[in-house]
Length: 118
Image (tube, rainbow, N blue to C red):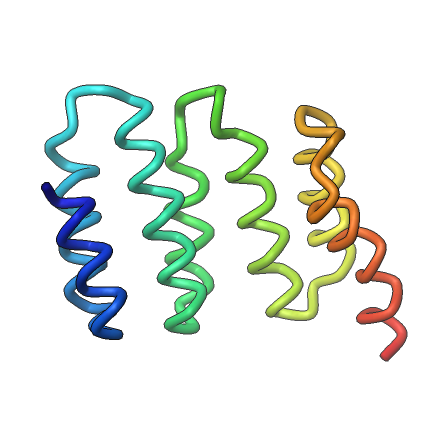
């Protein structure tokens, strides 16, 4: 139910409401996988809001091993937005270690060279 309400809030561009819904899931979900999904979605919204430190904190709270690559990718996105290219490269590389077939991730890593020299 909270994920549905989150999606509706995002569609209305009410990111503050989406954050509230995801924080509710993080606090109340019984399964670590559900908590991890909520943390990842929360981090992405925080990036959209320019709340980079909060996004890093949310990504760092992901505990379910199945979502570690996504957590690393989000960290890379934050570091890229902050123009911390070495940290972004390290995070994207860590994500690729467990998700080596992810073409979008490979593209992000390849594009770092352009961003760093731009």
